[in-house]
Image 1 (cartoon, rainbow, N blue to C red):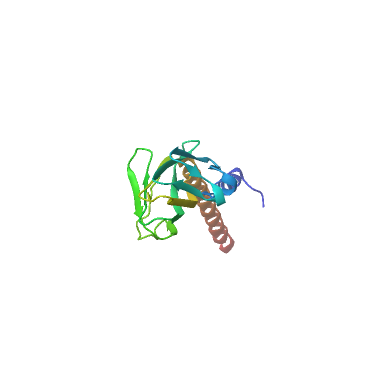
Image 2 (cartoon, helix red, strand yellow; image 1 turned 90 degrees about the vertical axis):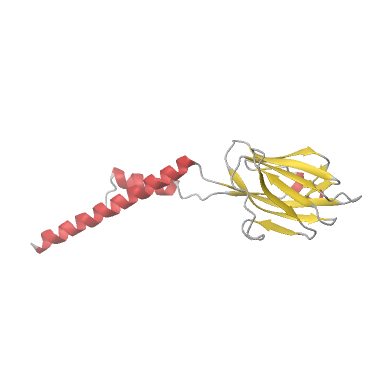
Length: 187
C-alpha cells in the first residue's frame, strides 16, 4: 500500500506528539542543586546536602526552584523530615502568591491530591519555599525527592490536535472509499 503525503503527515504528527509531560526529581544525590532544566537556589540561611537530602538549619530558610527556560511546571510532591515540632513550609509562585502552606511534626511525603486533597501548586516558572518554625537549638528540616512536573507547550498541543485531525480524516476517507467500492461491486 502506497503512503500518500497526508498519511505520512498523520503518522509523523502522531509520533511527534506521543511524548508525555516529563517529571524531574531533586534527590540531591552528590549534593546536586540542579536537575534537567531546573535549578534550586538557596536565598538565605545555611543549607546543606549531606546524606542526599537538603537540610535547612534553624531557625528558618528559603530557596527557589526555577525553570532555566521560563517554561511552566508544578511541584508534584516532596518528602520532608523535621527534627522539631510543628515546622512550617510555605510555597509561593513567581508572582509571590502563596500556593501551599503546611505544618506538621511527622516525617512524610506531601504529594498532589493526596495530602488532605489540598496540595496543588498550580503552574509557574519559579517557586519559592519558605521554611520556618523549627527554631529549637540544633533543630533542622530536611527536604528530599522534590518532584517537578513540566507541562507541554501550546505548540505541542496544537501539533497533537492537528495530528489527530489528520488521522481522523484519513480514516474517514478510507471508510468512504471502501463504502464506494462495495456499492460499485454490487452494481
